[in-house]
Length: 477
Ligand code: NAP
Ligand code: MG
Image 1 (cartoon, rainbow, N blue to C red):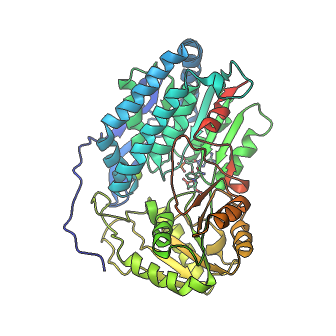
Image 2 (spheres, helix red, strand yellow):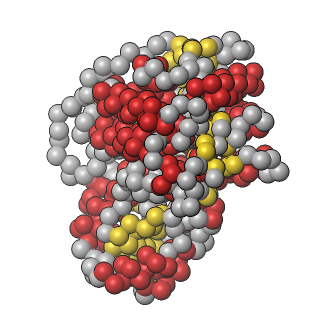
Image 3 (cartoon, rainbow, N blue to C red):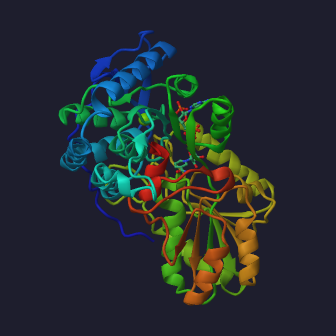
């Protein structure tokens, strides 16, 4: 059982306005339709603010502002001067880190310890890293002395890492001399809007960064706009395919970071207690709302029962509850819709004959919460083994030999990430080299660094973010 801890609530040093407008051309602009929508706190189901609905006219204005900024200020600026602005944004993120962390947790439901120690830290690190590249771009692409920016970038991001995904898009785009229009997800617009405030404080020239809030229709209008030179999308494979169809036949560039169904492979010779921690991080971090989550555990048959027993004991110690409590491990599911999607897939697992285990804690009376869960007796054909659940639900399967593990791990339309746990370095290498995944973590999971490229194979998308490779989509040679 988990030790009973007294509540340790984070204070909320953040002022949330009743209403937010778009940030276009350095000004706060209401929706051309005058319409707004609510963003709620998924842990309390209470409304936090009303946010502007992005219409096609708003998209038009934002793209025009980004184009003007590109031609007038940003492209002609000396790269070393551009770098100063990007560094300023990075510093302001660290200065306002508590505010950003609390707002991220309130708007999206993730535990404060994660937004504080992961999301905000990584977001600042991305800006610092790409600021350093701004005046060194001639070294980014072998054989190209004078790479040029691409132009105006249209970017659409999901709700699982709202600030961090904004940073992944904005930092490399503007460091390379492009300007950007970014649409955050409908359920989590607030930290992107605070980042817009930070851009204002940093005196970034108007129109270099534009934030347009709205739903899928706003995203679709942005993708279709002829004034966009490059689309950078992170989200579901389903929407990624729609975007690909829209962009086909145009001159627009595109990178897609999509879904995943990663295998986390545990060999019998692995240090099992450490591996269990990696399995827990792999699937329960951010309630499993992680594209690279280790959602399929492949465990060597001889240690299956031992691993399952350890995992049963371990999930009982995870603290589920108020995301603003510093002791919370499992926060709120991002939205009612996502909660329903997870519940439906869990029911399908039970109906198809897998065995469900869940932590036994009580759920808070309000808010969207889901217990840490795993299934044993899963077969490769079950939906819970094939479809992305994007929640705190793990599917456990077994294997006997390394080659069987590789075959099962690769038996998925996705290919974003994978994990390998073994005591033997040679076995790690043998397996890692054969896994068709953009990232393979050996004896660890969910490790990130701005200098390390990230991205997928097959239906997990194409293009890389992070590192030198993350500059390439934003440069033309
Ligand atoms: P989603 O439904 O694809 O939404 C992503 C973004 O696209 C949101 O801003 C959404 O707006 C917008 N959108 C919806 N329909 C659109 C359309 N027809 N045209 C243009 N934009 C549209 O994905 P999600 O459910 O929010 O996010 C979860 C997915 O993202 C998962 O599959 C996950 O694996 C993936 N993901 C991938 C990575 C990666 O790096 N590979 C990272 C994080 C997440 P609304 O919010 O208003 O619907
Ligand atoms: Mg919200």
